[in-house]
Amino acid sequence: MSMTHVERSGDLKKKYIVGSRKSQLAMTQTKQTVALIQEKFPDIEIEIKGIVTKGDRLVDVHLSEIGGKGVFMKQIEAAILAGEIDFAVHSMKDVPSYLPPEVTLAAIPKRNSPWDLLISKEPLASLDELPLNSIIGTSSVRRGAQLLAWRPDLQLKNIRGNIDSRYRKLHEEDYDAIILAEAGLNRLGWQDKVTGIRLTKDLCVPAVGQGALGIECRSDRQDVIELLKAIDCPETRKCVSAERVFLSQMDGSCTFPIGAYSELIEGKLTLTGLLSNGDGSIILKETVQNENPNQLGETTAELFNKQGAKELIKKFREING
Ligand SMILES: NCc1[nH]cc(CCC(=O)O)c1CC(=O)O
Image 1 (cartoon, rainbow, N blue to C red):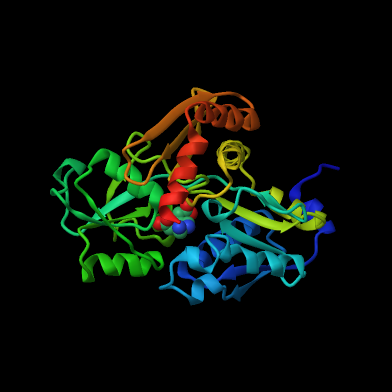
Image 2: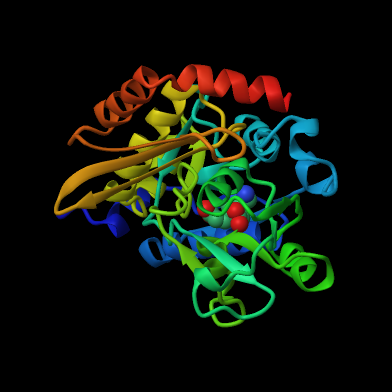
């Protein structure tokens, strides 16, 4: 007897509950993930349960004041651990580099675009046309530092809220351009509604995990792990693992300007890491190859440490609190 997914699903339960934040992006990517699973397991029912997190309720408070980026995940993780939900879909870039052993990322599906887009109020044919002293909406120190390294004249202005409200603020408030992740726009199906100029890794190294999703479940739930394995993309997992090892070796958080992007170049696992200070006047950027994701992340981190990465991070924290 052949071991197909359909036959193995005999061991699986009939119904699973996936938890999701209620934002449009979270719901959309959860639904898209459910559809992927159901392509493989048509007989299983998956119910989506909405969860309101602290980070969603306090939209106008800076994230650092309510516990950093992890706030979106903690409550969802608690629901997984309590058995209230069976699994949850996260944007990998919002997943901390350390996860407790009680949970696991059972699937990392094929990555969407890893790049950031510069979306300007007035259409631009190229980045060079961005007027002098333009006001750029971004709360990301990673995006801000790399933009300033390229164009020190640009004025950075904080912007928060979901993709929808940030796009609205571009037109209603005093911004010349904003930066958004292309993956989020793609997932919402806004490719045609919102056009921007793609910032590739020469200009703006993306956040660790950007464009990838991670599906989290309890480490002791073999049935859920089995289900999710069907939508895992081993290549994306390798690349994202290398990026996350690099991040964890640097410090493990992303409260300073850090980016990493890993891809296969002519079959070779390659990682570009980036570290900067707040105004982009210091940029450490290295590209390393190694077939082992852990070693790749570690050797890249060692290279950065030899160049004073730890001191750079420490200094950034002193200045930025
Ligand atoms: N920081 C919020 C966030 N988390 C995930 C995405 C979408 C992109 C992705 O999944 O990597 C976004 C929006 C953005 O950065 O513009």
